[in-house]
Structure formats: C-alpha cells, structure tokens
Amino acid sequence: MKELNTLSLTRFAATVVDITNVERPACADEPILWLEEAMSDLCKEPFDRVFIQNPDCCGQWLFEKYPDAIEPVLKHTQVSVPFQTVMPSVTPVCFGTMYTGAQPSVHGIQKYEKPIIKIQSLFDSWMKAGKKVLMVAAEDCSLATIFKDRGFDIINVTEDGIGQESMAFQIVQDAILEDKYDIIIFYSWMYDTLDHKYGPEAKESLTALYRQAEFFDILVKTIKREWKKHNTFIAFSTDHGCHANVPTPENTDLGDHGTDSPKDLNIVHFFGAIPTSK
Image 1 (cartoon, one colour):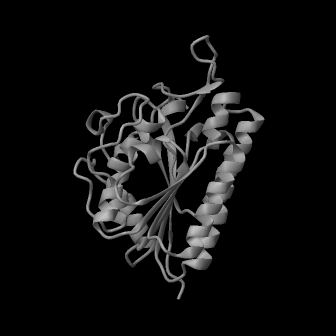
Image 2 (cartoon, rainbow, N blue to C red):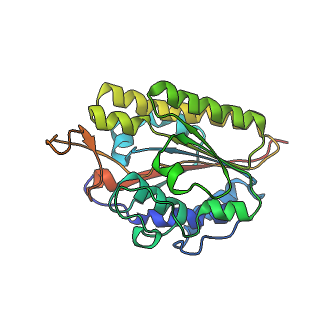
C-alpha cells in the first residue's frame, strides 16, 4: 500500500451531521454526498439514533493484512470509506479534525497536546438540536479531554489495562439497554496502548485489534434488539494508523504513529444503517 487515500478525514463531520439531520459545524469541510445518498437508500426515514465506536490506531493496512479482524464489523455495516487522516497523525490532532471537520491549523491542535477545542464540533451540533449525548472513554484520553465541558455526558473509565476497556464496553452496553441517549460514542483504546508497548503485530496487540470488532458486534446486536423503534446510524471509525518502530533512547515504543507514511495516514471507516423494525 504505497498511495495515500484521497478522501480527507475533514469530510467526516459534515457528512455525519447531514445524515443525522443537524446543523453543520461552522468550519467543517464539505460532506461526502454519495455516502449521504447511500445511507438514505438504506434507511428512507430520518436517523434518530447514532452509535459510533472509535477504535484508536487501527490503520487500513491492518485490516487488509488481517481481514478476519474486521469481519464482525462487516456483518452490520454496508459501506466502507477509505480516508486520509491529518498530520501529524496523532490522536488529539486526528480526533479534533474528525469531530470538527476542520484542519488542525483551524481547530488549533497541531501536535500531541490536549487543549479544549473552541470551534464548533459535531457534539455542539447534536446538543443544539436537543440530542442526548453520551461518550464513554478512558480517563484523560484525548477524545474526552479535547471535547469536554460541552454539556453532554462523559463517563471516564480509568485507563488501566484490558479489564478497564471491558468495563467501558459494559457501560456502553448498559446505556443501550437503558435507552436514554440519542447519541452514544464509545472510545476503545487498548490496541493503541499495546501497539506502543509491543508493536503493531505482536500477539498482545492483535488480540486487542480483534477485540475492537467483537465489542462492536455485540453492541450492534444489542441495538438491533433494543432500539427497534429507532432508525440508527452506526459507524466504526478510527483516528489514524500505525507502524512498527525502531526504538531509540528518546522513544522506546515498539509501535508508533505520527508520520506521513501510508501506514499512519490511510484509514478506513465502516458505516451502516439499522432501520426501525415494525
């Protein structure tokens, strides 16, 4: 995989707000019209529920090399979209772009740091439309930190190993069953954590990679069973990819990201529609 994908991650936000019938963030790039049309064909009525899982660091090359790792997601989604994420390809920069639709120079995060983003985001659009929003994420993670204090619910789970990510998964499962929220965002982080520690293709890392899709499979099955009266838009959307690293005294990580290589920049998102079951 030598070439870079041509669709910019800046186009995610406007596309999702259009699909969910809310106002676009002021600085968002143009939407992907063919994706909007595909979702409209799959669900003739407006979407009133959204479930997005954000697995960290799951580059396109991983799913091309390990296609069975994504099979549980493909069971529930109908469209895959190859995106090129932004530079530097690190988590707060990329999630900042994903949920505002703006380049890093516009949303303000241009290196690994976690200030609160000030420009309009997808979360602001949903809140303005009266949506009830929940994010479940690791404590102090980039995604929850850069979009906090916006008036929606965030449940932070202490980032301390695989058991804690499973706890976050259970919280999301319970929230679906509670049927209280219109929008649920689930940040799953363990592949990224283990990639840095062991490398992208280590046994520990790949186990976490497969687990991301298994979480999605279980949660979407719950949505199909419990949200039958709702039209639900679902997405499995990562922030950036990763590559194997040669450790140095300054950086001892065996897996890394942040470069302009295709392994770091090329990602693929998976989208689906679950119409009401009458």
